[in-house]
Image (cartoon, rainbow, N blue to C red; front, side, top):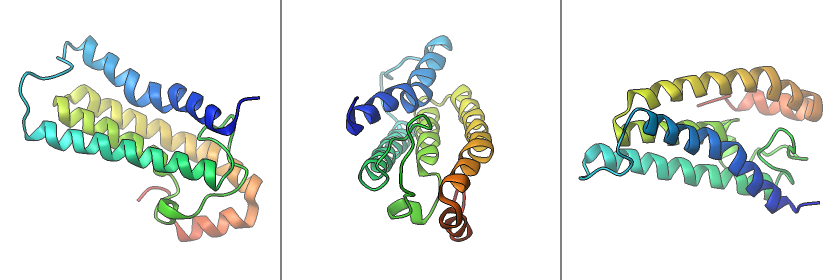
Length: 157
């Protein structure tokens, strides 16, 4: 059986890696965007900062899932303990927020309306997944602890 760290690396590549990096890359290539611009502008700086911030946020969440939750970011291999510290004191879904920040950062960096639309679609998919799958599972698994957490912390921001 793979160690927790290796399982997390696998799920990072398969889930946020595909949704946040591969699909946006394919959208940009399909629409003919130059992957690295010839010159840099303020939008490149702002977009790059958002991509970096979202990536760092995601890594922090992954670390918390391993260190505190004894699990991974994947619904196929979820945490064994409810994670409520750190950034989880402010939002119940920081991984999804980090993913949207990365995609919006990419939209700003490349000035891509297509990536902005993709970010909106991605947020809609995340919202439905959270409300229809994750929250009911967490309520079943963690009961009153999760209900109390939900009463204190917002789903998004």
